[in-house]
Length: 540
Image 1 (cartoon, rainbow, N blue to C red):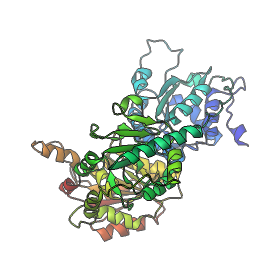
Image 2: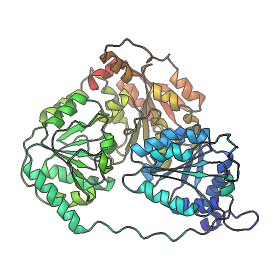
Image 3: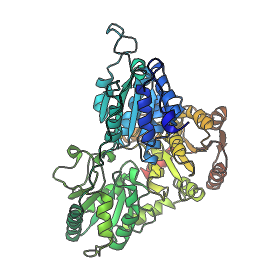
Image 4: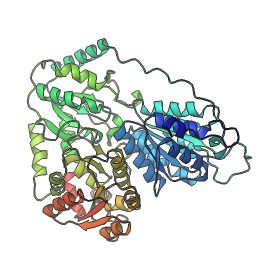
């Protein structure tokens, strides 16, 4: 049976294509091979249509985790992730991953069940105003109907993929899924590429701004295309420019680049990063999106935004924007000589950060130990908390797009499911997740999903039995310690109960050996690493 034939689930009475089969066909044509979620009666017809079309449905243990998996999967496949749920409680559980995708600029399409239009309004069981709930947190929110369901899905595929990327919510009733669907309209032509003259003009404008600056700082953000990495590295090196990254851009520039000052906001070293920004007299935001900056914008220097920089209203007042894609502008600049030479004004900041990395008294022994075990193309997913600052700032990630984290929303419970989605997207690459014990508790049930799906991820769980980041904030405000401590949980035993391998590592060598060994296994491995939560303080 061909894919085209399999994608068609005929209506049981008329023999015509159903809306479910039309949707499944669009998903398959978009190149999406996995969908995630928890089924309900309303989406069973769609799940079967997806199966027939060749898109595998991944059963998860919670809709929130399913959405995180789909989002990470989409990020690594350059296609929107697909998450499915029932109506009512299932739909409500999708709010977290939808908000995460929207604020982290990741393409995600959620399809949730809904009540049939034929039901009277008096039928209130599990009735929610889904448009009212999700409309403000998505790029598109619509009902899939027999008349225009295929077109609505195409619109969602297009809108979620269009910079800045984001989320869409589509509702589907059992009645609509089984209804006869007309053929969707022909695909629209691809938009014309940016004219070369515009790129040349934007590159000249950026060159002139840099020539007039004495202490320029390039900040690379989530809107910078992965394919820009090679030219970006060449340009920065040839022109000898200082650079910082946002967490979502980690990997676009190597950590060992001589003028790399560190990772901004959400990655620790807040005082050092703020001091560096304050000294700059020009900031070039290459694909930098203000949603990535956790604290209020604290840069007084002029900012020149380049490429996909988020919604206009979110940018710093009076900032100039160059609309050409980052990759195109950098390609032009990388092949031309620098307009001058700038003083090495970041050497002290670079040395201070690198000194912390090798300081034996700091928790930076953890990223050092992990770095020794990971292959160069490893994908790393972190959760949210103090450990995110540690890993985002100090663990080298060599490949663009290989560092996954929730930054715009900063949602706990992201790291473990994101790693599963990443491994399904890229089964050929090692995938490491680093989580705190709080985030592990939120998503540990998905270890069963990882075991069942045969995704041998490695989950390093830093155990301090507290919400250490919140506790340190509490302490800084002179408040008594309250509401931030957990009881101790046997993390390796939890892993074993789900069918995964469970280990403990208490030293750098033990951690390196444990991770290296885990990468050779055919099943998921959880490595518990006991830490003192107070040890994060010098790194924040």
